[in-house]
Length: 265
Image (tube, rainbow, N blue to C red; front, side, top):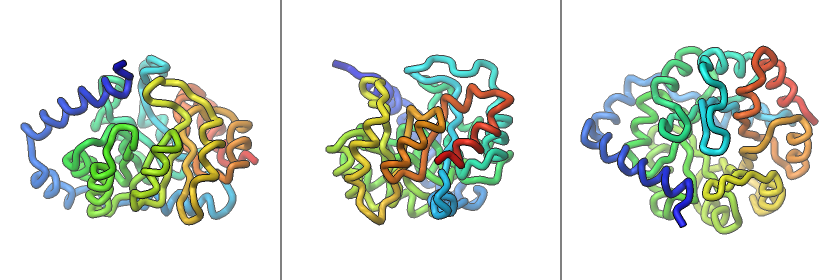
């Protein structure tokens, strides 16, 4: 049966083919030299986690396959500034258009407006996307084990590291986690949302967290919306959290909400 992730990767192959017709890896590589300097993504998370606070990666996305339109007419720059003012360690910005309503234009506008590190969150399947991410100012990319072979994950990671970027390697079950731990990156994301079935369960982090060895940094992702959720996942040892949909909807309380989540215990 075709899953939501299958459909996304299918059109992503078409996007990559179009990108290669428009430009080349070498041309994008050249553009990276004029990009804004890399801001340490993993280091920013560590600086907060080392104080036993919650290092938040606050996400900006206009829509999603599971939630539909999240905040019609939203100003991503204003939201990003709210996140930063509330104490977010980093930002995650969706650049996928068809499923999440994002764009590299959104990414660039936010990059100009904030000073904290940024993850280009997209479905990476080819090194040219990594070069493109750095050319637009990204500090980190996402490597999703559910849509990559081991050799592909290793290639994307090596490419990102070559540009000085960090890599968040994502798994959502035991088999993917075992593969993710073979990728040479300290950031290991546990996605509580099954991207194939679009089902979310915080128990995923609770189940997988003990399998993440010392020396790797666990990032709990998806389904986190309240201080109680943070407290629940802190019990697994998590001190890094990726949070999006719920914060997008908090409006005038957004900055306060980020601060409360950062300090939840």
